[in-house]
Image 1 (cartoon, rainbow, N blue to C red):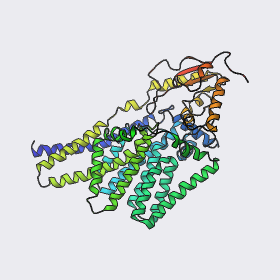
Image 2: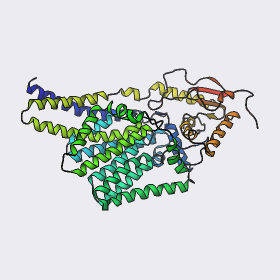
Image 3: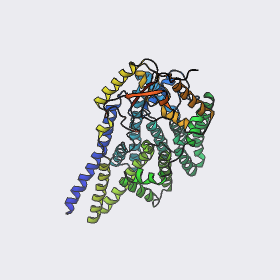
Image 4: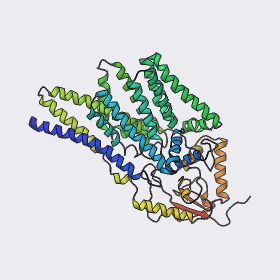
Length: 504
């Protein structure tokens, strides 16, 4: 191939790469806006998250003795409180929670863009990094815009990291300490990020590091003590005690690196590693230390999240965010290197540059997804409202542990989400566990509910002794499924058996 043809191919690929990065950002925003107002669950736990917000707005405590009526999820509370504040303005439902997540996702884009732009001074590479994070939307669980706290947690952590990297004053360290603490108060996984941040501050400026370490320690430890006092110790029970009792998936100790990172992001991983290695050949060791420690913190957080039993693809989001930054920085460095060598009319280097662009373009291409699969259809919406009408037609209480908030549309009461209950029931033997199980069992035995609706024909309690399955909720198999996370929808309808209740 002639040099002029290679030059044209290189320019075309460069434009195509930029267009691809922008396309993924636009694609994500389009998907998010099309489903942000969807009045039903996009993911299994969303309804339970709305129930948490409703509990705050009703003036009740979040962390309390686990009961059939309400058992909290194992997360710190900031996302719920911010969503509750937004809900007071825009109304109750999924929308305020998704709005918080969507705003946080845009914040992540801005910080990632700013990170690379500040480090390199290059607009092109900054846009590419932002586009790469947007491109991980589907392989990260299509999670950025749903009613869950992960995106806010990542955004606050990225802001803290940005401040530590580019500002070196006591006030910036204090602000970074506040932000990483707020990230922790959104999701306790931020501790895995805070530790390498503290180590970096300590090594590079041990005197000033006290502002970051002291602020973060004061807020995290202080908020833990305060929330524990307010909630009579239940805060620590849910946030710290229960999670450590859950088993780890040992297979993911290795498969995480292969299946979760290398397989979907081969070019990103290679470019990121090349960039990290290149830092050690440069004069500035401070920058090398920063990126090595922050990579360990962000990817380590993703790794630990995936090791946890039940850890879904959303756990990868902090790792993907920082890999996007490393990709943008590495892309800029390699492109500059090839352009510098190519200035000497070196045809081999021009071929290498063209190949490099082609590999990066292939990486973006490999992350393409069908946006329609992430957006509920009109049939889903109609099926949802038909289901609500069915609930309205049932006299008495309905127990539907797999779906929070939805019963409220029909004027029914929501109960503790099945996932939160399972977190307690799979812990070690405690009086709280025994009391919760007894409460559920007694309610079933006494046929307290006029109907029970389950997602699957599986249950721990012998419901079949007291309730009969009378049919499926939906006649159409293809409607009303959640579009991400555990594939879920109300499936089986049970009603009491005559004469089988045990009366006191």
